[in-house]
Image 1 (cartoon, rainbow, N blue to C red):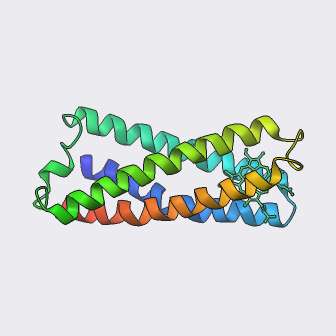
Image 2: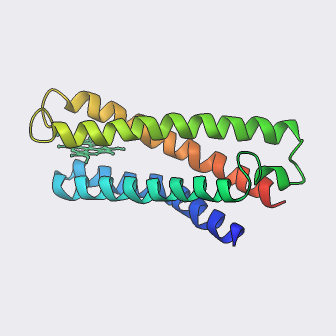
Length: 146
Ligand code: HEM
């Protein structure tokens, strides 16, 4: 059961950058209504995944209880990648959260307009962050199941 939940969350994490990219393509094609819907939906689904992961960690015995079962639990390379993954994911989700909230608030006020430049930059940072999160999540997942 634990493996199934982890696998579902991993798949969500791997698909997130692809769907954000699809959403950005809609903005480039000037279909802002679809852009907005896709971006809000991907964020909402990933937030559910994040809460699911948090719940799974808690019922499994708290921080370190899942990765601790890995035969690589004491391996310094694994530990470093795990910390790098957590830091990158927290940073990415924080920026993504602000991007979504600010964009919803500024939509039709200063977006398009004054906020457009910051919106594009935050969008690119979020996209790169989601790729980083996906790649490091896959490595952590593989180490965890070994
Ligand atoms: C509900 C939230 C969102 C709303 C209301 C929204 C709205 C918009 C609007 C109105 C534009 C056109 C700006 C202009 O032409 O000056 C735009 C462009 C863009 N958005 Fe969003 N957006 C949202 C979420 C996101 C998210 C989450 C990302 C990335 C993670 C993102 C990335 C981009 C990018 C990269 C562009 C520029 C596309 C281009 O090169 O033309 N947006 N968005």
